[in-house]
Length: 367
Ligand code: SF4
Ligand code: SF4
Image 1 (cartoon, rainbow, N blue to C red):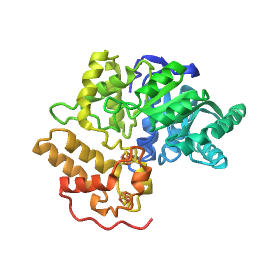
Image 2: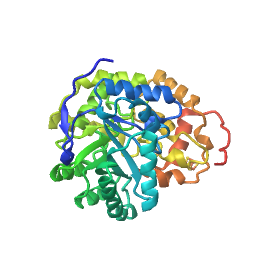
Image 3: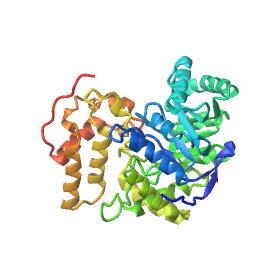
């Protein structure tokens, strides 16, 4: 893959000047990706000009694969990982030490306090910042950040003044975080825009369901990069084919006018707020190991895009290939607690089952 020229942005008070396009590491760690392909995605991305990598220890094998790929390339990237806001101080440090080991590095460019999403986790932020200051003094961490799925809690943490970087969802179907981006711009906090493709499932919201077109990527990424806070984009990439499409899209990105942005976000209101962002958090707690993060996005495509019979057959084919069907759900509700967007997953699974008229599936296995 040839190197691609990208516009550079200044990442807030970190003063890092990075290409606008980075790489999110969640899809990279999936079991179906494999260690070789996972590491190869990162190698090719970095060799083609990506300088920002975002990951987390609970993203499957993501950190390890990135560590493999960075052998001989460490000084070419800004490396970001996370530790849970909900953890005690000891657990928090333990998670960071584990990340340093898995990544095979001595210093993290940024450590994000992960999922500052509720009052209890917000209360923990000051303690975690104190811990991170200590790690900064030891040379293990350069910048302090947060990730959040709650605009209110993200803004409260940013207002403490201790946060250099904030990672939040931002795409044309999810504008709830615009106030966070506005505040970040005011306080010179860098923004990492996660889910710029809505979990990989954003599509133009017009005539035909064609989510795999490069034009779709160009539209969604151009929207996300056009906010005045100058976010860095970190879409998750889970295959070499996706990486090729990403690099096909990158030279065509451009800043959209306010009118163009409004047209897109108006069209996206058809999505509603209850679409699945495919983050996979719920899957880690599901006793049936139901691939909610794959099932619901398929159903979303069916719900929101006008599908002809051919498209519907294609979606049904994907659905039938998944390991367990939606009927394996025992309605324990753990997924709802874990979902940052509080999606009514059991109900959505029933709707998906009806939509795809699935075959009977095996009962969930104990975990
Ligand atoms: S409610 Fe269903 S999908 Fe959610 S965690 Fe329980 S079994 Fe899994
Ligand atoms: S249901 Fe929620 S937690 Fe699960 S994959 Fe979708 S957005 Fe993520």
